[in-house]
Image (tube, rainbow, N blue to C red):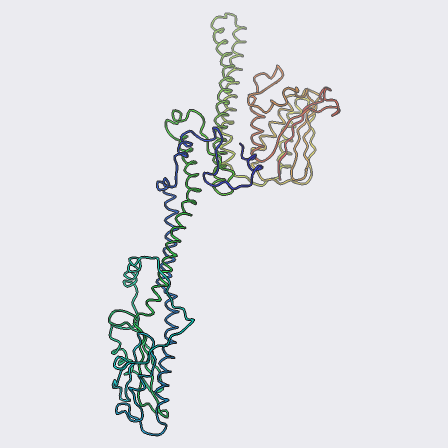
Length: 568
């Protein structure tokens, strides 16, 4: 099934192995390799490994960055710090509410307030510790010494009991890695009592002080110290510490949720990478294998037929373009090889004719005795030598033409000026032969981009051919006109015209049909070279006969016409 037909029958996108090659579309070795191929075989593809590795690296960097930056931990820390500050200030308000308004207060002596009774009535969150200090900063009592009020049951509140599917090994591994690159807040690990005493020692009147540290086990503890005031005079202070590690547990839960999604994302990424790799690496591998078959030293033994590039041009991506480009290159290469083989065969045939004539003339020269016969044979030898020289020169020019057309730089030039100069020069030759030479060229310049010298060679060939086929009294006319985005340059003559069967052959290499007097004077490459030059410029060239009426194609031609169309 051809690509064009396939595109009209379905709009499905061809990916990877979705495309099924038709019979003979690919080499047998490639077809067998496709049948044995599986996703596991991608591990032998460097390109597939790179695709998977780079996708995984991007995922790992993303997750590691999220875990390292700890955005959820920062949010939880801010919320917990705000909450414990409010809790500490509320507890201080409880103590202040039980102070007398005017009587002197001494927390250490128990004057004005029963510290133990007040502390026992405070309800603390589970794991929290409360420390009470006097005005001098001495520790009076802590929640460890007094049984505080039990926590009341709360209905409607949901605790965070999310289960974690990531193993403890994975969590501990992250903790170990993060401990090597991340330093926790605070100084060296200490007890909660020391934390409270340190914080209270740094307390200033009218200021609430907040600090976050780690205890002796490395768990995070939030602590707040605030004063107890009577009539704006500080009479003592309290320090409240949170439960050790409560924030760490929440962070661990969030982290393991991220790691859980990371594992799922890794699995999905690997799967998608395998699919992507199969749609990229496998077709490229097939294209490379097909190209390598043609480059092997023993390619003829490996693949006796021509190298066949897999047709993936139905894919709407770069691989489809690459497949089409490679197929086009291979086709062009084989066309060039065929053309070179045909050209070599034609050259061999054309050279054999004058060589056979030379061999015959030389053999006859040894046998003839009369001087006039020897002179005739020498003329034949001279004619054949000049014919061979002209033939070899034209063959050499034709063989180099392709590479020279690519190497030479195009320039803008006035086509009318070039044709007019050639017409003036060749018109003199026509007049010497008795042929009228007529030019009809526009007065305004027509600027085109191209190789002026090569196009001049085309018009010289056409004009000299027209003159050579004209007899005394005939006429040659050269004219040019603009047609839309093209310029037409036409060379006409009133000679015998072109035989109908020769109209499709005149541009073939070595084809020549000349009057008897001009036999051997032309190689038959002029028009073929002219066509090659014109087509290299994106133009067209054709030949036709001039007839008295287009309605009667059997009428005798009035001459021949060659038309060159060039874009501008």
